[in-house]
Amino acid sequence: TLRDTIFTPDKDALLEVYAPWCGHCKQLEKEYNRLARKLQKEGLTEYITLAKIDGTVNDSPIGSMDWTRFPTVYFIKAGTREAVTYEGETTAKGLWKYLQKHATVGKGIQVMLKRRKRLKNLQERWLESTKMMESMQKSLMDLPLSGSEKRGMQKIYLEKKKMLDVMHKELMDMSGSRKRGTDSYVA
Image (cartoon, rainbow, N blue to C red; front, top):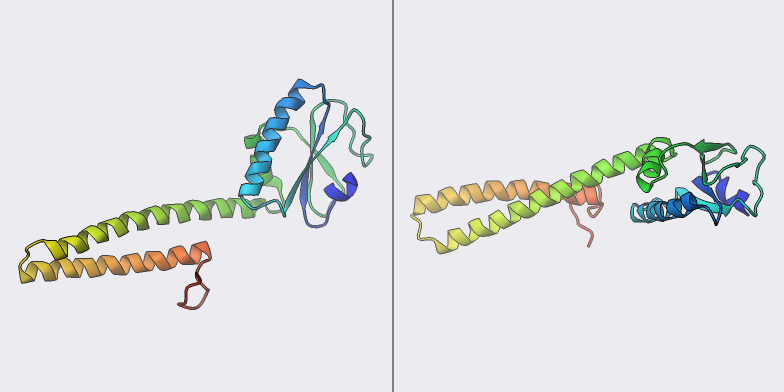
């Protein structure tokens, strides 16, 4: 039942109450679908339920939820029986910001987004550095350098390689590809 779907001990829920004839509801439907794709992409569907009900043919699952206008969106925090009327912007972006602030996993969402941004930045830096290292290695092989010039370039190359190795380990740790506390890598 709807009650069992939105009132759970371990998942927050957003409930959209709509009317099939309502133009604002049709616009919200597009935004609600965008939000659903965002939750799917971010791996949050196990923490947040998106539900909807036709308010013209269905009664409220509990007395404290009463709709007189369409659309109406309610937020239900995991483990509660309290539905809070969402009064914010009825866009995917507005709903997403609300979830980041109010959802049980809200702080986790913010941490995860910062972590992903940092990971992406590290990946870009690592890729740039890898290209530079390949170029430097080619130069060492192809250029007619004196012994001291080659040793100087080899020293720089080894320093940069150490930096790349450190970045690589950090990337693997952040992406979860490296087993914690070991130097072995998981394929």
